Image 1 (cartoon, rainbow, N blue to C red):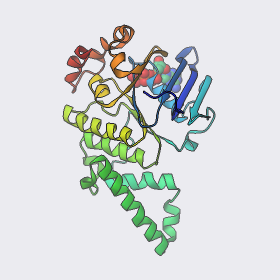
Image 2 (image 1 turned 120 degrees about the vertical axis):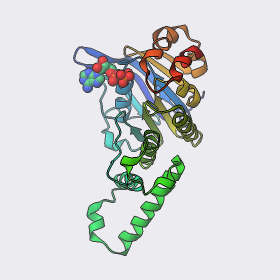
Image 3 (image 1 turned 90 degrees about the vertical axis):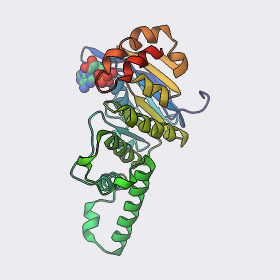
Image 4 (image 1 turned 30 degrees about the vertical axis):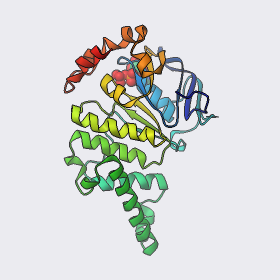
Length: 273
Ligand SMILES: Nc1ncnc2c1ncn2[C@@H]1O[C@H](COP(=O)(O)OP(=O)(O)OP(=O)(O)O)[C@@H](O)[C@H]1O
């Protein structure tokens, strides 16, 4: 893993205090361009809090957030244009088509909105066509271009997650934060999503995967960050992390129960360690 280049994102000594609860305690980590990093840890370890600090939803109690070496700790979320994220709860507009969902995201990013559309004229129609073309390209990129005209409410979960990734890409980010994007997926859907996530890394994005499923972590990620009760337990390669006794004690035994449900592989995943 490269550590000499400037990180795409860096947390330096970040502490996040909610009243008496310390969700993150002096956490330092980095995300690099072209690298997929998994962030794991038991429930309540501080994973979503870390995503919220990186994306600017939360301002840390202390410590710094850097993007490309520049300190942006106090910058508002909407100004962090290099960073896009998906959420644990789907943000897809169910009543819109798949294509429209990406068009809306592109328009949010470009500032081209309904007000301008109402003014009409050939320039607007031209711009609309360009946006639809770009939206289709993004859907093709994530493998669901053929579903462009389907209403989003009819998508199975696996394809809805791919749509969420397309909507994140519509923000034209350099950093993509995926919050439990594989949870609840069948093994087949997870496999397809893992291929997409790997390809995002290969395309140069800095990708952060927050995940409980160790198979997905291994299939997608080169780098690993482990949190436990808000403290950084491990940062390094996935391969070494899976051999780290502290990581195994704190998390991997626990993983057999944290992601039970449709994912039968989880039980054997723990055995991978
Ligand atoms: N806005 C908030 N106000 C108060 N406490 C919070 C807030 N957000 C998170 N917490 C607390 O901070 C701790 C870390 O929560 P966080 O959601 O970051 O964990 P997580 O690792 O993402 O967990 P999970 O795997 O269950 O999603 C938890 O104890 C949680 O209850």
